[in-house]
Amino acid sequence: MNNFVYHSPTKVYFGQGYESQIGALLKEHGFRKPLMVYGGGSIKRSGLYDTVTASLKDAGLTWAELPGVQPNPLLGLAKQGIALFRAEQCDVLLAVGGGSTIDTAKVIGLGVPYDGDVWDFWCGKADPKTGIPTVAILTIAAAGSETSESAVITNEDGMQKKGRNSIFNRPLFSILNPALTATLPAYQTACGAVDIMMHTLERYLTLPGEVELTDRIAESVLLTVRHWAPVAIAEPDNYEARAQLMWAGSLSHNDLTGCGHASVFINHKIGHELSATHDTAHGASLAIAFPAWAKYSYLYNVPRFAQYAVRVWGCEMDYQHPENTALAGIQATEDFFRSLGMPVRLSYIDVPESEIDLLANRITANGKLSFKSYVDCGTKEFTEILKLAK
Ligand code: NZQ
Ligand code: ZN
Image (cartoon, rainbow, N blue to C red):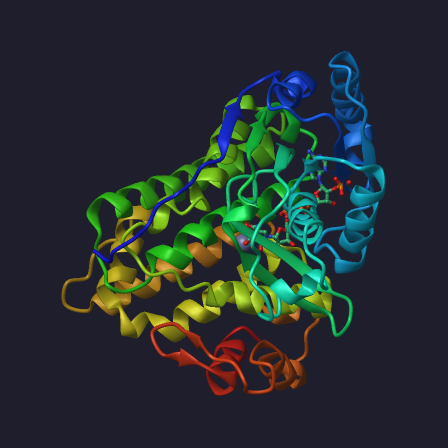
């Protein structure tokens, strides 16, 4: 087992009705004026906007608003949020929505106390020294941003989509009411399911291999999503299904499923590039990346991929040829993603083979970057992986 530091301080309020206490909870924490950040309108259609603002009013709080966060959120809007937060003299960020909304709030949270360009933190020019707290009311089980230390943003200048980890990104508290996810379209539910699985798999399918307790937790998350995602898609109002997915999403990316393991996130590098250049939903981009990356990688770690196949997908162990078991698990994953309605090849999102070199070069900043997986992944390796996704 590798050494690790586990620090996941976000307080979680899980279950029905907590969103109507948001005003009182903010007040209890000593805040007086939140900047409320939200997306393209789902919270207005569902009535959540009214619930939240009524609760703020009841608690005697005033607030400012930044609407209009889009999926794969843009830096420009976050910069508007930084200016608004300062002008309105807010003291906390209240994100009401999914990963895109929460991440926009986190970017604002790092940007407000910083004199320079907030992008400095994403392009490696500076490290955050402090941050404004973010509080989240989650409306989709997916990205795990409600408990994670990551914030992912796209800079319109060159459409660069990048993540940034910082302890200041961990939300102070998050409200998780599974009933708020009942209005999700099936496609978004499916994207979320894939993302939850991938946050666990990017940690699980790594060296040094078995870490018994962490592995069993990770497998539980994967089995839970495997069981409940199809139920949530077939029965959007099924509270139990929504609850299982929501909790799986938060545990999958609060670092619990990585204790003692490496974490690789190569699939996310590919996914971010597909989202930035082809406006692909995050989970869908990962459904395309994973089968290709896994086929490229499994021979470096056959026992691990075979364990995954047996324990998560119930594949039979082929002791003579365990690589066949490993491949069966990869195929089962792909079939599952497909059954949820996800694209699993580049062609499904109209990316032609002729674009593969360009994509690989963009991921590695024209060969300047490489990322550690079983092998160091540079332009050549990303090109080979992407060819397996065509
Ligand atoms: O904008 P609105 O109108 O709210 O609609 C959203 C959006 O169109 C809709 N939606 C959300 N909740 C809904 C709903 N529609 C109906 N009913 C509801 N209850 O769903 C669409 C997608 O929302 P988004 O916030 O983009 O989804 P998700 O949570 O999947 O977030 C994806 C973003 O998070 C990043 C991704 O890269 C992507 O940019 N990630 C963030 C991570 C983190 N901070 O730790 C880790 C992840 O790996 C990921 O990279
Ligand atoms: Zn993800």
